[in-house]
Length: 235
Image 1 (cartoon, rainbow, N blue to C red):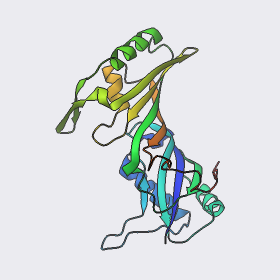
Image 2 (cartoon, rainbow, N blue to C red):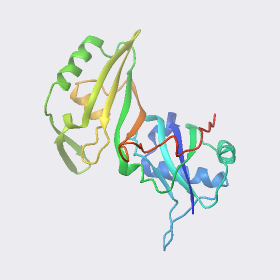
Image 3 (cartoon, one colour):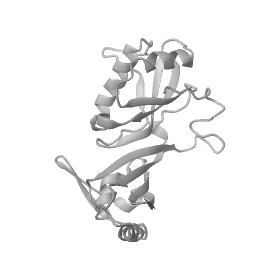
């Protein structure tokens, strides 16, 4: 039986411009360079058994992204850490590696929501004005929205994708904590929420800070501390 490992990592700097498919290829190359016995699917066109929890929109950084990978051999986490640490590309930093039960469902099938931190450069936005716009948006029951993606137009209720938004100010820095849905058919996107707020789409940094999953049952969450090994740091 393949060993299933769950990796928590940060994606920063130039890597924020790397799309989902290229990010998968980056991870596959990194794991292979580390000399780890990565599992591959069977069939005419085998593919690496790795799975990201949720695609990160291009241009966004992620401080706690999650990846599952499967190995053909059971290795100690210390060995996996040592071999990965030697070949990690710039901008990719692993913070935790845990072994998880292979019977758990895929992370993508259990996605619930995520938090995004939107930090503006000093002087770009006014805190009181932005706070008022956030309040007005959250008071809406519905917000019909239209989004152009290539040749297709997506129409949906933007308000339904928003769980909560908090406006913060520390010194001269204004930021937003967006709590947005990741559920199928109602995925929230920070850029669209910013447009709804009438905010600028430049002079800021957007970071996905956490990914949340629905519980497997009433007593057990997706990542159960009793089911995983202690945290392994790769710093």
